[in-house]
Image (tube, rainbow over all chains, first blue to last red; front, side):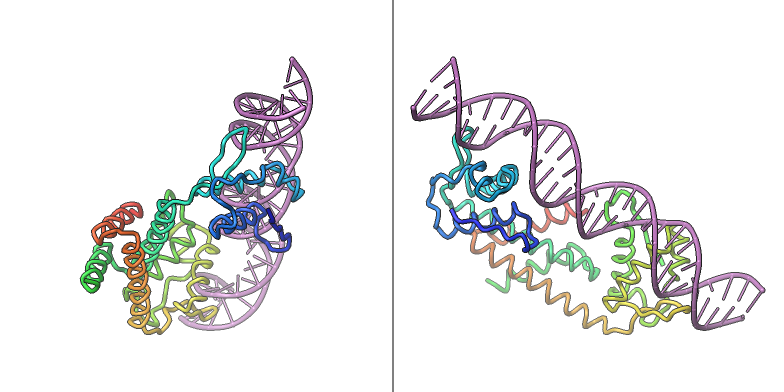
Length: 125
Length: 125
DNA sequence: ACCTCTGTATATGCTGAGTATATACAGTAT
DNA sequence: ATACTGTATATACTCAGCATATACAGAGGT
């Protein structure tokens, strides 16, 4: 497990850990159901509090990248389609929110936006 | 000039002022070169510090929505409002298209997306 | 049983960004 | 002169975010 903490990076430690592990899971460098380093072991390795590694793991678990068995360890979650769907949904929601925000700034109503969506749908078809 | 401050909204006061004036400029409710209420007058009106109204005006000026003549007043910047609206519209369309594209990839129907928009609209309100 | 490993839960200290403010200043107009 | 404009600087308060120590509870090998 190679995690590098860059103190100059400005990014929070827990976030650096979160990002690097997430990448390794997505890239397949970490196999499904493989055991991850313990939050305490990794913390000792990086010379930080284990609460910080725990936070990174919590974040990853919340997003479904790993699962935890108390008193045993943390494991890479089997990557399923649902997970990717969730990510997609978040992106879609973000785009819609952004569109609505801009619409509000331009004085457009929600109904106007709905109309634009219907129009775009017809275009597609 | 009708500005409403909602203390329960959670949004900062300066931001509420900023957003409402910006909206009125973009929508055309305020004409080009029209004089805006003085930061002090508006502040007195809203019963807040004039520093807060100043901050809203500063933000608007930084984005080019108004210009200031010291010791005289603040004025709506001459600006092709139509052009600005067009830019906004393009952005909105792009976001919607992007959302629809991702939705299609996830196997969501157009009606699903419409439902998401309606939901987001309720959330906003 | 015991010790040591695992993850969990709660409470604490610190820091920085964000928000709103008063007060003193300087230019314009009547 | 005075009554408006906007400007500049310094201050107080709050709150979210980050990292932490300490105390707890279950699993497993010696």
